[in-house]
Length: 246
Ligand SMILES: *Cc1c(COP(=O)(O)O)cnc(C)c1O
Image (cartoon, rainbow, N blue to C red):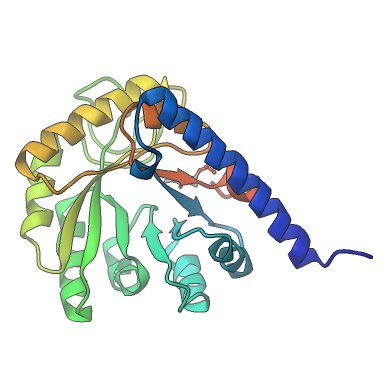
């Protein structure tokens, strides 16, 4: 009997979840950390809401998206599943309202103008949004923010304390921690080591900001070794995306 496509997709996702789960367990054991410290966020960008529903049925609780329109539509299609939505993409201030409407945590807070816009919209919506300060690990320590070879945004490490204070003071926002993407071509362990130092420094001023969002399909083991609490995993769970969409 031929299998329905949805059943086949469910099996694919279940198998991928099992593989990722084992990688996380192994990395936690190697790092001497409890598995319960690490949350896997399934990054579903470019994949349909039907995949989000299948993942939820398989026990996934955290979903990541990086484009505001796609994410808003998908979140609207997946209400009532008890999912936590993470916005992980670069965010323009004029999209703050749309993102605040569905996101529970925003990983890409990297400038004060964005803090102001998010706060205004969160207060207006009567929501509390978790915020992670995105840290740029591009280039040498002390290099400027945003741009660089990785071109992936983020605040320079030196700017993190002031930005964190702004989030902590802002209405409607909660300072949860830090996020980073290992720069292209860099050694992930070195980059995540620097992120850990930034996170430790942040916790001196803000003890409850314990989240370290680091690690993707290719570098989750190194991220766990350097204290990541949240992994953002796309390809290893859902498969390769079409090449023109990162
Ligand atoms: C797409 C994306 C991911 C997931 O990357 P994979 O290599 O597919 O696991 C993680 N973080 C951010 C910011 C992304 O945009």
